[in-house]
Image (tube, rainbow, N blue to C red; front, side, top):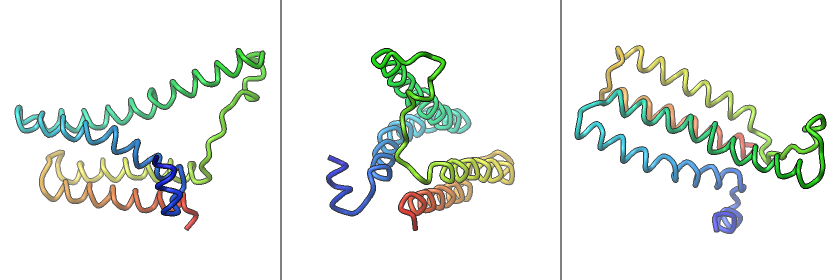
Length: 147
C-alpha cells in the first residue's frame, strides 16, 4: 500500500517505509510517555522510555529479522559460516551512511540542548528538540531523494 502511494507521489520506498516505521513505533511511545508524565510527573522517565524504545527498535527489531533472514539464506544455500559475506542482505539506500551520521549529530544536539537547559524540560526545550528533529527529518529525506 505505501509503495503504491509513494510511487504515485514520486517518493522512494525507503522514505515511505521509514515514515511508516517511525509513525508505527513513535506514536505509541508518545502516548505512553504523555501518560507517564501526566499521571506521575516523571518527565525523566518519559525521556528514557522514548530513547530506550528507539534503541530497542533499531538494534533488536531491525537486527533480529536481518539475522534470521541471513541464517535462513545460509541454511538454504548451504553457505558455510566462513563465507558469511555471500549471504548478506543488500540495503536499498544510498544515503544510509550519511543518514546515520546525521542521526548521531541529532542525538548530540539533543544532549547539548538538555545540558544547556540544566536537564530540565520546558517549552523552550521541547521547541528546540522539535526543531532539531525537523532538521533531521528534512535532511535525511533530502539525502535519500538525492537532492
